[in-house]
Image 1 (cartoon, rainbow, N blue to C red):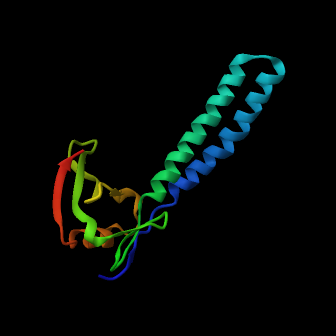
Image 2 (tube, rainbow, N blue to C red):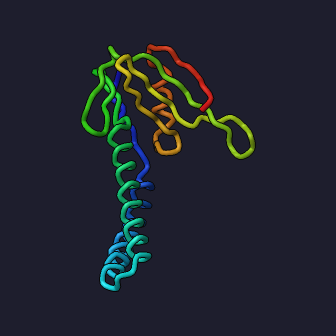
Image 3 (cartoon, rainbow, N blue to C red):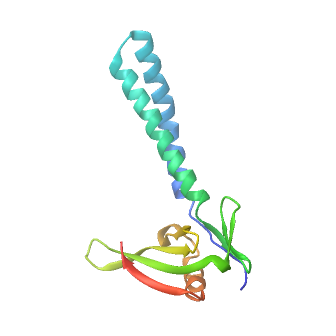
Length: 148
């Protein structure tokens, strides 16, 4: 098996950075206003903005670190640097959803391992999806399809 890098879209990172440019200064300003004026509402709104941004950033970073970075002869490399060997590969599962027209569509592909680890591939976030899809379909394991 040749090495194949999974190229992910940077749109989510750009959007979260844009949110941070708005949420963080406004949140800090609201907290400062609430503390200096003794008002609870601006303090609460500011805290809510900062907590919401922190949670969103945590989820995005966690998802990125646990997603597939590359496929190699040794195994699947995650973006956090961990590599899962092919010997642990159990199966792949295509999770299907319905689009706005009611037609079934591929929402994500899960690569599941014997140790309970599961890695996701989301077609709309991967630039080289056709190559990645062909690679996953050729893996020597069970291929299943489930409703999401």
